[in-house]
Image (cartoon, rainbow, N blue to C red; front, side):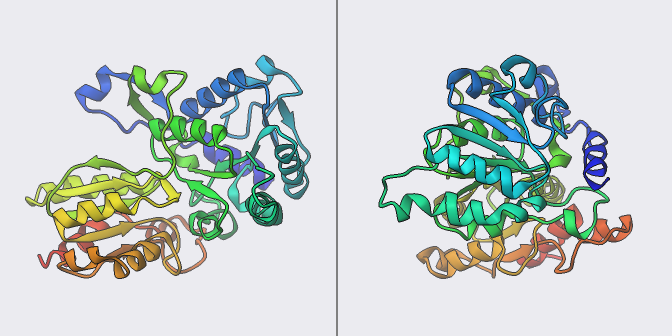
Length: 356
């Protein structure tokens, strides 16, 4: 019943975001289609690649990310599993150790808790424990973070959880370019990669050019992207929080404040050099994330600044805009206030800059 509810929420999340004349003139592709095309490209490119998970085959995926792939590649490459994350994650890790390149889909990363022993103790540590003799080229992917109306047990962001573990690479795409390029790079990577998607972004269309749709297009792991240049303050975010940061930057521009927005893309490795370079220009920094504040991604960025000479470039303390430090409420009004919104980020920017 709950998994059916998650599927219905995903289907209701479609909307348009890029509406500028330039964007409308370009080819539009949803995040969902970006992920689907990335899977298709890599399945066609390498016979060792296969996808497994709950409802990924005959049902075309709970969120239709794997639409059409079972009909194209068949039962041996697109594999429906029972509802047992511990079981199919273990099968996937074993297949990776044996030389295949599995893509393990969790219907939501909240369910990955059932399989975290395989993710952390088997996938992440085997290369080290085998003295480099055994690679584990596996991708764990699926929706992560807050959705809509699925309450405390199905709204967690696992970016900080998995980024804490050496041996894993962790990416968190925002738009179609991120989703397509990062997933393809993750599948080709020789090590385990966690791909944290966001189900509210699946139906959002973004403009893409021929470079992004090219079969060999990749987004390098560990490299952030400047989404909007600015000179007054740096706003760093990942996943859906990038949208919040961009909306805030647009509002700040009305007040004559030019904010530089950085899309992290990769949580581990973390591209601190791009952030340091930006802050040397702006001298102010805000981090935005939908996860909890304690030990979060923003907290790590703050700590990195404390340990680097870039700390002396700051003219004010770093400010974190995070999810409220409580389990996600079910009530819609409370849910809206449990996540950082554009007014929250804008107000934080004004405080950091010492403006009213």
